[in-house]
Length: 418
Ligand SMILES: N[C@@H](Cc1ccccc1)C(=O)O
Image (tube, rainbow, N blue to C red; front, top):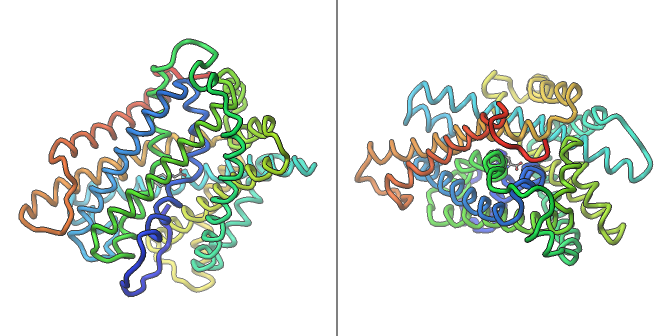
């Protein structure tokens, strides 16, 4: 999530660059959980939910920006929480960021193992999924270990590849959609109650907030450009998710998802189900390549953020030995977890959402409230509209989503297909 941005002097940077940073972070493995967890509420409710979650996550990011603009460019999330909200929130915020980064790294290894396995099966090789996850993690960990610049270059190439393969694969799926499947789904007749358990996955899919301080550093204090970059970047993600849900739900019947869910709902299973209905082998490979690139680029972005965070926390230096130590604390826990529980993808995304409700939703709203109290007359060039109502609405969205996750975990909310 925290894509590294080199600290270069602030020149006139284009809007597109920032929008791509945000879109690149936002679109990740969360996207592969969306069709599976939305199967219960199905298409129309999913569209409404996506729209609502997008708006809430955009506004919470804007609150973070508003607070951030009261500091010098380069101030980190830690500095913001410490200064504005005090030691308690600094610790809660820091711990929830570290938790999200670790659990997402594990989710990506689980999803990566599943999708690498699916890809290998196509060429006749079969590996235990835990081993495939290990291969995936080791290969990409090596890139992070080599250097930040290696990650920057490789993710840029991957992003280009993702855009091309996504549109090729998706256009084929979109041509084949069956509107009856979308609008008159089969299976049981209950829909709306399943919305609640899906909410946390929507929240995780629209997470990008670790990048807001990076954008302020990247652009300097140019609020109008930063706001536009955030709106455009998250809107690109919204369009991609809408196309993705139309493509999946318009091709796989609602009852077909019960089978996908019973097999764990991991990335390889979903892509496998889509592959089996695609018209050409070539486009089928495009979909598989897209899935590999999406999870690999998110893995690089997230683990680089975790790598830098842990190096700073433990005071490991940038020498070969220091980087090796940092790599060990970064990659060992999620990789071991991936070996032990290769199929925890969906559960991990759900927990990432739970922690993200704290630092990506509630804490930004509280910080915006605080800067407005501390500096009622100071003009930093940007203020989120909507006054107290917007702040309360975002906090309520965070609390509701967290509650949904906990209730679903405790089997107190209906979860489709289980
Ligand atoms: N949106 C990212 C996950 C994420 C969550 C929270 C913050 C940053 C990133 C994904 O879909 O993979």
